[in-house]
Length: 371
Image (cartoon, rainbow, N blue to C red; front, side, top):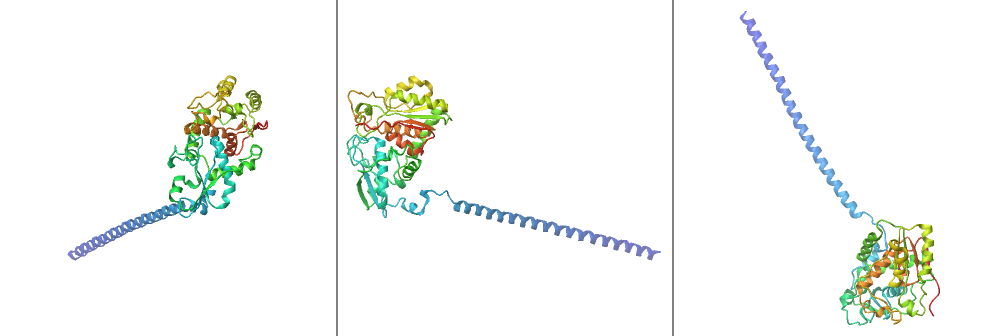
């Protein structure tokens, strides 16, 4: 009996041993499994980080190599022209015309471009070298840092007159004379002709960005979000008093009223935008169209004396007043953004057409020229 009990106990003991071994084995396997899971998770995290890093690098490279919209300013040749004063050749343009206004000078220089670009020189406008409306007819009144052209317009490729004069060794002076301005017989009616001049404008002598932004702000204040605006430009003062030879005859306000009313019946405008330097003309429009008429109030008020028959450029409040000239340029920018236009033929209306490339409906009066 004792042996049986001993053998049974031994069996039970062996059974316990056997059971503990299975449990230990299971525990070991479970630990190994947990360790493998940790390793796998770690590997997955590392792979994700590696893939993320690769993705970020690809995105950075993609941005760097992303093709830009092609414009004339992006070509390699033009990039080489920028800010290279030593190797490039420059041609300094001037135009001796004491009686010419801002946009008369502008259109003259623009017409000069089409003839001199074939020389391969970069054109730079100089409004200091000769007496003119900008420097009060005194070429010594402005320093080299104050080239009036650069208050209003960009020089090609962001050069400046001062930098060219300082650093360049290849300079040629050139007088822009004998070249016809953009034809007023063509530009009001021919869109391809306008595109040609717009290309010269935007590439070489565009209006400065800050002036365009200022004009956009004023336009929004005047018209809110409306784009249904009729632009009207009328030249008065010395044009009416002096009737300068070879300049286009300007329409009487009463003639313009009839055409404004005809345009209104067809298009039902939200506003009319008037550009004129003549207080008499402006007051006639205000009395007729009341609050529907919008215009910019000038920082300078002056009454033109028709009996004196004085050139407007000689007026003391205008001569040398760059701020007033900028206000006029802003008028032209806003005019160029109107949907339709009624205008006399002037340098201002020509630039408005060049900037805008045209309008939906156009009435540009042609009564011939003063003789």
